[in-house]
Image (cartoon, rainbow, N blue to C red; front, side, top):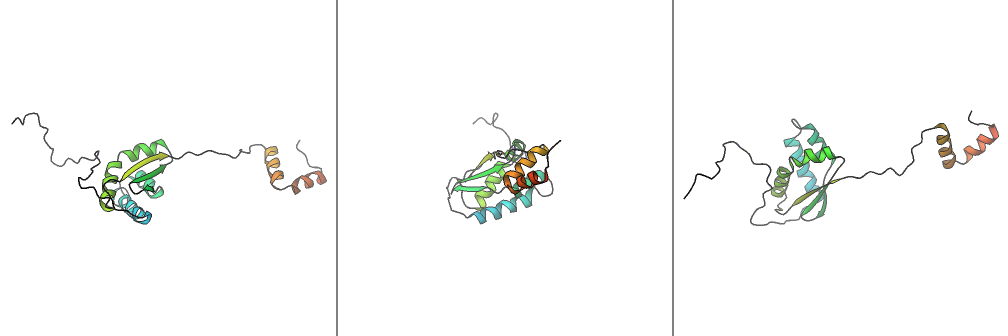
Length: 149
């Protein structure tokens, strides 16, 4: 047997990049409250003192349950996604163990924000907006003879 080419394990080295899937697949269902409790506990135990940004992301963004094996996490920007992906494997492994679901997956989505409202910049735009909302202002403007210079 040739042992020369086998990689040696380094003492104290922790492999965190791999998502571990147990050979005996367990797929217990869990509630949103159980997920939230374990999610927040993980954030508190692992990030509160040393990774404040990840802690903040985790306490403000609780994943949604899509089906019994899939969670969706909505993040607001690419920076959060990059930071979260660094610890995603550890979080998944923790949740799989605590929620008794070895097939659990976590998918990250960036939230899309579209502003449907027109921004009001000028004094005239503000007045037009308010007159549309409150037609009686138009009457008052005419009676008082108000106008922009």
